[in-house]
Length: 287
Image 1 (tube, rainbow, N blue to C red):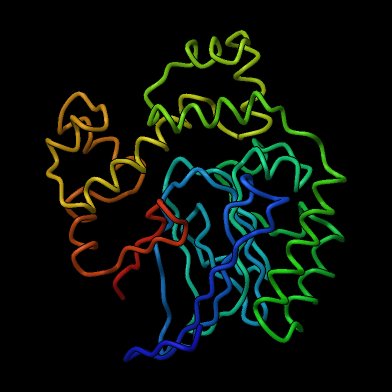
Image 2 (cartoon, one colour):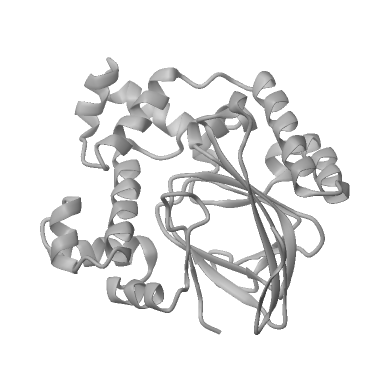
């Protein structure tokens, strides 16, 4: 798509659809380029996905857990998060974002997902020598369609060399989504024909978090969508399975660091971003 302009500068945002061979596990590609006159920061909300972001020029900036000076990365790998984190850039940024389900990332990356959960890592620490050739090819490719094709080829190759994800883990993950996060671990284990301990072990390995935490993330996503659609707090609490409005508010603050009304205000100010279809993924922070 052509560049878009705003008072702060210009940006380019190009969605890409992964090859059918990688779906449904690989959800989308997102090419981006931004040139702004001032730094930008955003709050990344829990989404239940694993993301790989490969930068082309300027480094990616992410706040560390201690609140010290932000860490800089050439490429970032983020596992499933149950709480929000923040990051940003100095005004210039370009690169490619690859968004995956955690069970697909287990096969593609060849890493146990609990090692990534709740963390942002330098991608080369996990991908090793696989990352360099892909990053160089993406940076030198002449256009976005060629870059998307390069990612397709790389991911197909990585998956062929990686461990196989259990179809029952993928089924259980889908079941959490279908039930909007409102399913017990015992019921989920019964659905796939495993014992509770076996399900929890496989989830830790191939998803990164427990079935209970996965349910919390899914329920948060439905909460975000309901509030964005204009539903009130009491109505949303009842619709997504919270005991009352106070329960919703406590869980919302714990997982996003925002109060529900702050999120609603961000929606009104057009500061909420949907980088993954069906998921409100980020809140642009005010400078």
